Image (cartoon, rainbow, N blue to C red; front, side, top):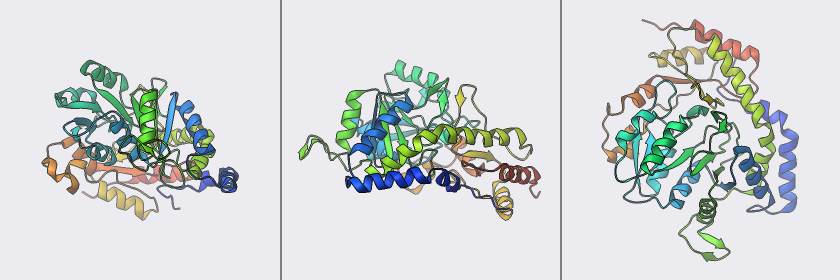
Length: 368
């Protein structure tokens, strides 16, 4: 048997008619930017997230950059980000001219540890960016309390957490604004790059829309130094076709994760911990092993796809050498990067495929 790390086929088969109809609708209308499809998706996604406003943008990185710029964050400012996440979170800060400041995660959940945040706050700190990594919500009560007490913005990075809950409330509805990615592999994925900003703040929504449309509030009138980052009509139509199925997609992922959590019983492996406050959506299911390379080779030899998120932590990436953060300075992020292995997790996995993955994980014994 072969089990890919990810497959889009089950979802594509289920939504084939809706996706083709969305394409035909846009193609017939011959309107490809800032049209009816974009408006409809923005309204529907804002409602799904439980917020007032949604602004479609080009991708998840742009979503964070545009939020930070709308907040006036720039050179001389500092923004706290987790030390363990995809590099886009830190790049968003860098692109504004501000400095990303890394805070270590809780090694059980991989999410930023609220107890470590305050020691990194300085007089230049303007914002916190909690990342709901792998689809599990951060401890938002503690993060919001710190931010309120210290006068900081909270910008949620929800790129991997479409529909995740914290104490029954949707992620993306806590901070001043939140960024989403709709990269094809996400729980809600476009058929290309796409993203969105959601917020309850009308002024932030307006500024984000202007900044992503060349700084323009109306045609040929430019009030800001903006860029081109807009959600096109085709991707908006595809996303709106997929959105009604998102609860089912997330529930299916929880089914798979539930089996992994209860049936993987191998002392060689460390399973993810689920916070009692969170209902994850399992964009990624990751195990940890001190013998990660052997585990990966064993699974791949059995026809099981894997991935490593993320094998080089941000502070050790060449592009961030200028920060001068040496190896060993952020040991938790480094340990995760050296031990994490992501296993198959996608909508429509069969019980037989899940059985096969579990059997091979339980059978793994490292060479000693």
